[in-house]
Image (tube, rainbow, N blue to C red):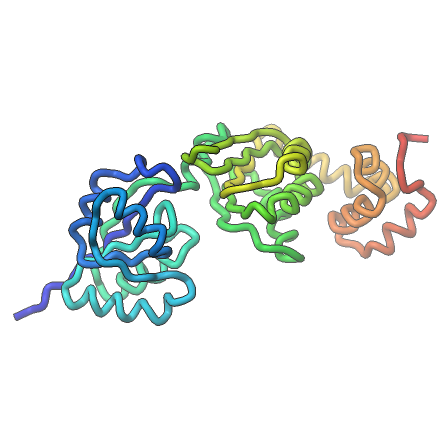
Amino acid sequence: MTQNIGELFICATPIGNLEDITLRALRVLREVDLIAAEDTRRTRKLLTHFDIHTALISYHQHNALSRIPELVSRLKSGQNIAVVSDAGTPGISDPGLKLIQAAIKEEITIIPIPGPSAVVTALVAAGFDTDVFVFGGFIPRSGREKREFIEKAGREHRTTVLYETPHRLIDTLRLCVEMMPERPLAICRELTKMHEEILRGYPQALLEHFRETPPRGEFVLVLSAVAEEQKGTEAEAEEDYHDCPIEEAVRDLLAEGYDKKTAIKTVAQRRGIPKREVYGAVIDIPAVHKGEP
């Protein structure tokens, strides 16, 4: 007799408001044999709220490699399993993807249960172009990797959605001020929750806001798309920028409010030349620029 193989349900759960869970998701969570949860404590609160008593097992980034063989074995033995993330749709910037890939490799049926997603929720709330967009996941923590990531995002002409943590948000906005000062942003905080907040504006204004109001909660950043006519203008401006003398490029940044050290560093990075070369060209410019002499 051939053993029936179980099915893996990719079950979206609320990103905040528990009322956002679907009737289908509730039914699946009641009927499966096991729920593999990224955060069992958080998932247990959800199950308790809806009076669901299905068994839970932890499945997160720290135990994924050891847990996947066990879960695949259970599926092959005929058990149906639902995988849920900390919040939202599993497989998006979380370890759910590895389990999905392992199940597909074993020819196990994958059944997606659609529902909440912070990416799409922030995207539509931002009010930017949604015909084509890019999801960049979590912004790197710090250092050169983060700087290069933000610089690349600044060159992206499509609407871009990014995740960021509260304690790194101000540093991220500083980089946005430096690298894309004219790029409109939307910062979505605590989506679907009691203290939901959606702020729209340029990087400098948003930086000033969060300097005055320390960031708290969960954040999604949305960078606006660049209009076709603006792309041509940007390309021309970039060409002019590289053609102008180094001293003029630094003076332009000083006039925009950059301090001299940051202006030198920015020009060096944009032109791909050593900072000492820029410094040597502008050594006589005062540290605080008050306008053209």
